[in-house]
Image 1 (tube, one colour):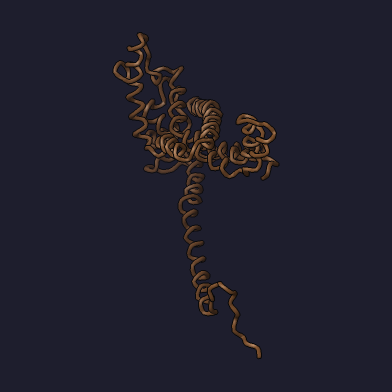
Image 2 (image 1 turned 90 degrees about the horizontal axis):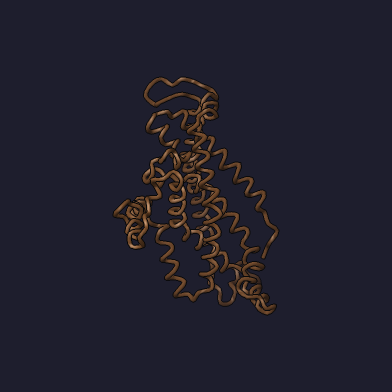
Length: 311
């Protein structure tokens, strides 16, 4: 005699047709609202601002008076604007110096942390990650005290050593390098955690094979860790490039673009043109130029950084 009832597997909980149909109904009714909410979010906060910025870039408008249509005139103005070209130079110089240093330090710290015992590793991770979650305003106040002339920590150290240490933010030759050092100090912990997670995901069998062949820490890092971490390195390089090109707070609060425009980055110049001079059309054109630069360089990084390493 046969039966239509489903036979449950031994040791497995029985799931009736009613429960399955109830779960299927909940799932089918839950997914569409979530998809619609995500679509509305991206349309409101990403697509709409981009389209509005593209429209503003075609006008000369301060949001108060009548807008004047310029077409591509704002983009032609950028080619003749010395401060815009200076902002590009400062931003690219900032990235060219900061990016390789911070990636090497993050990778090195992550590799060293992977060799430590778990308790010591957690303590050091907490220490280096504190600057990452610290607000920029607090970081700037702290480093402002360190760099403060005559009574700052750096000046006091110089007095103890019998030498005069000037405020690096006050010199056009050293201001940008001081901001780079602060940025590296703040974000080194983020990349170290990412690389540490990537290293922990690598197969231990590869390290065991390297140890059998007599490879020490440096040999394992060079021939195992570094090649297999190339996808992580690629992702971090793209994220770091985009983040470095958009660094704003230290330039705005610590130097104000000075001295002698040595730290007037492109993002800071966009802010000044929009909210100080009320040239929103020109500022929108510069943001589109920045978007094009970020997109082009990211695509180049993806093409050049592709790897065949798999594990």
